[in-house]
Length: 309
Length: 278
Figure 1 (spheres, rainbow over the protein chains, first blue to last red):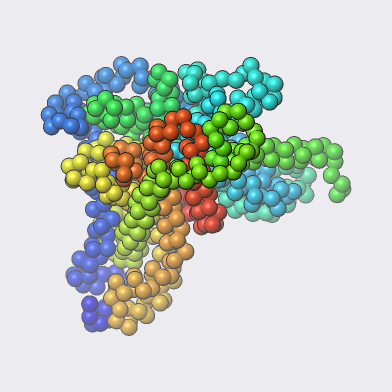
Figure 2: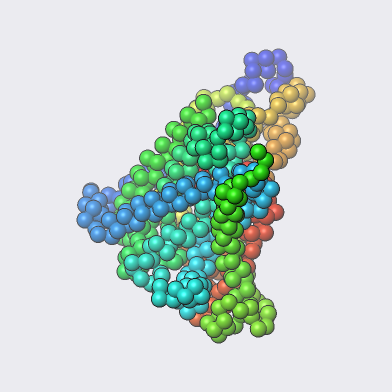
């Protein structure tokens, strides 16, 4: 590029484009990102819709168009309903625990008498969220293990030995045992998001409330919650989205078992696609997953946009 | 007035106790994991609470030699490549989107936001087919490329808002001195954005290092597996030798804990700016 092209006189028109040559240059800057997103995010998404109308397998070239048959089968499949039920259960508990208890803990850590120790608690509570789910899942599998694990040993110690149990091996308790692990892992993460939001609340609000004689509980309900309500909504929505995308936790700890009792949408999709080699049917699961997460993401975008304004 | 009442004191003690129990509930499982990695298998069965009789590193050595070492290197390769690609591709796009007017700029923004909204789980079936057709299935590229693609939208977003907040004077005078756009991008905008690039790199690294589903589906041979998937194999291989598995878990967890403690501030800043759960 020559100096002439970039002469200050042309630049009077603004930092915008100065010549045709530049126009193609601009394209060069965005082209890699554009290509990558088109071919590895958008194209697979469209392909997935198309695939869901076919019967096909990964290792043969024959593809049979069967219109809505995959979807008909899906809505008659009992596993689909187990999966949806588990995803919903997961979302409910996670919202209550992570978004509810997380909020209370964050508020407690913001109290004056705890401020000095906030850094320590914040760090400790947050650590599980940075470790990969495989490590957490395998660790908890051993913690729940009836022979070497510490859950049953702890119950023994508290003279509650009669409640000792094969937590992940019983189809009545397995899903709750897994849900508990996720709460253990992510409550600290949501708490941190709340803390960041709380620290933006002007301190004068609390001071004048205190002068008016309001106690900590009153301040929590009348100042803290109204001031961070956008963050509460955002946290709730991302927790719900996370609960529907759930895969790693289940796959690592029970792989959907015992029986199919802990199956969720993503593990059912994985099983159809990569265990039973019914790729079309798996694609139908993926479409359902897409629709659910898409709706909640739209809500999230809407909320974060209104809070920016 | 200043005296705290008995009720307040009691309330505070209860809060303290609750917070400490919660903290112990986080810390203890990790301590148990690290300590158990030093035990023999029979000790694991018999002395749940006692420390090991001999602190030997053999389990850690075995875990490293029998897979963890290789998985670790694979993860390093995949993660570093993903970070470098993601940062350059995103920074270039964010630079153009924050500095120039061009047709389709709005559309590009919609495209990026759309990419942010789509979760990788949904595309795993069709991506599998696509990677097979491209003949890169079961290579490092089958992870590096999709990881990069799914990190680019968020990273563009993060960098673009930072670029928009930078003062323009230096760039303006550089243009007057005859610099081209690439010079300005490379020698002015990028160096000025070091803090946000560091944050973006850390977030990308964490996501790539911990990713599980793609690693499970797009890699077939054990030689190429990344740590999260490799540990699953280790479980299979040591189905009775829990202590070695625990040692393997400890190695993997301590990497992330050290990483987090070192870069805590930057990571938290990025995570809260994005409000996107990993």
